[in-house]
Length: 235
Image 1 (cartoon, rainbow, N blue to C red):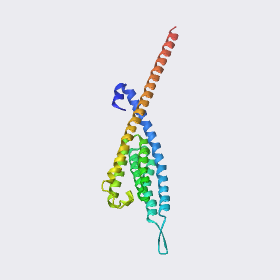
Image 2: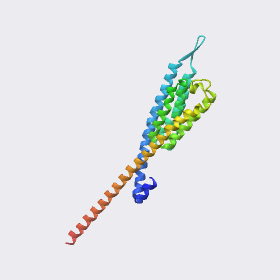
Image 3: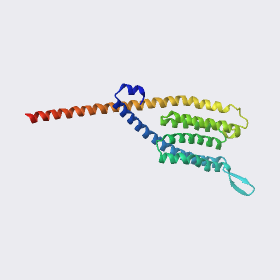
Image 4: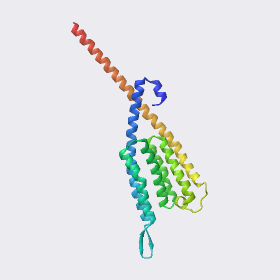
């Protein structure tokens, strides 16, 4: 609970509201973990299909060889998806699960961008992924995702620019342009996370206050019934 809310109510109500808020957040984040587990699996399959369609096979004389991109999609995609899926199953709602999922989701963006040869349309996957990560209402997760995608664009822009920008000699600062748009989205997503947390806290506070009022009414009713019973017994 925020310090403002805690200072406006009794310690018992504040503690109960914090308990309710934490419980709702855990349940929400566990659901989002499961959503991402499914999404990562779908992205893995989509990456393999994309690799098969875009560059299915390479021929070397009479030898039929699966293209390197297909192996990258199968092994690389599996390596990216395995850990977050396992964490979403065995540690749903945990902080480490959210951050691993955020990093893995951005790595899948990098993989898909690579498999499509740096097509600008595939870069939209980054922005969609950030919006999905905002479902957690945990803005540090967005920072993790931003750092991963910025590092990917920076490093690949130096060592393998065709795989991220689709051209061999992009400007060295191109990654800053992409990162700038990501930060632009982050500003609004972080604010939406803050607002979402406030709504959950306010709802939890109202429920805690209602519970306290209900308990007080029950105590008053029980005291009244006890007094009436004593009056009847004395009569």
